[in-house]
Length: 161
Image 1 (cartoon, rainbow, N blue to C red):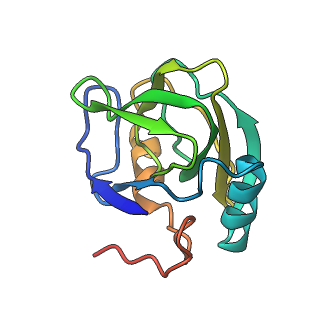
Image 2: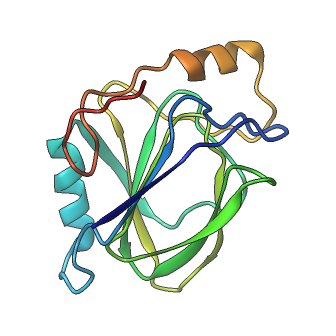
């Protein structure tokens, strides 16, 4: 598995999260595995992140102000835009995962016909969908939202300086 972290600053109406980096995990699960969705759901749940959906990723810029999110790519491949207009695009494929701290702008640029992602959130955090410039109370909520104790992919303790 290869791990990369990316820290985004605010970009126009997209707040991003300047304290907690995005985590990109390449090759988490073998892509030839028969049920990657189930494998990701079990992995995330065992680390305190509850799987809530299986679907494609929205094709419009949005962020979550009430929950951190982890995405497990269960089949196919996609190009995702992260961080708003000043951000950048990444390619993901079956077996990869992406941890998005609250406030991180994201959308699908293109997705293969067979693309499927699993979405999970820390226990006790209920996700919302935001597509507008955040109010001060939303910015406060994002910056004060606690990280769960464990990384959703590796299960190691999360440490953010």
